[in-house]
Length: 184
Image (tube, rainbow, N blue to C red; front, side, top):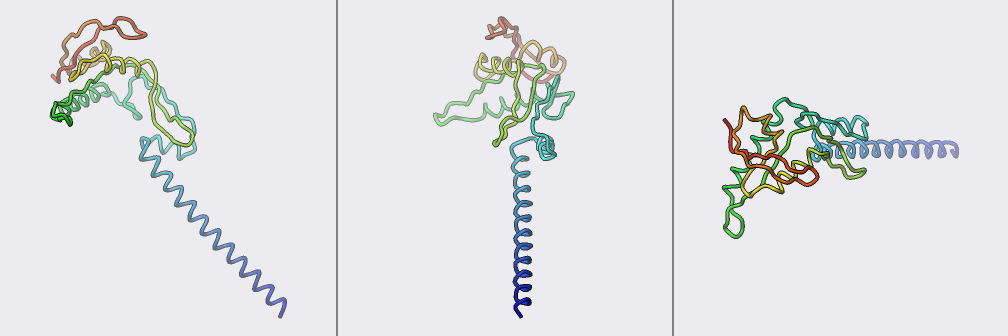
């Protein structure tokens, strides 16, 4: 009887451990799924998949790029977006009743884009292109879209520009700039 009781107790403990294992594996699977869902919400899907596949340090160079997937018409897509954004903002009013006027600037060249952070992830881009685009925006007049010579050269056959003139750009000196005014 004592051996039978010990055997039943051992089987009971073993079954309890199996159930605990099953419960733990279910929780791990749910957490992995939640982790993946969060990655897809904060990162581009292709980047989230790379991280899910085990890649930890992602930093890619884009010579001419839609991000994160390169595309031949990246500059055109940016210009269309900027024009749409400008039009949308013009129709908005602030709390004081005045029209919202935004400044948009862009520059086309190579850059680096990737994931930063160890526990909190962010997809970011950096390099001289980002700095010049930021300068184009900060030196832009409200309600306007300012483009660098490089951006205008790429888009001149599909978009209309007005010469703004030379602008002193920090760390770059004088740069010829243009107002993006519309699509041809």
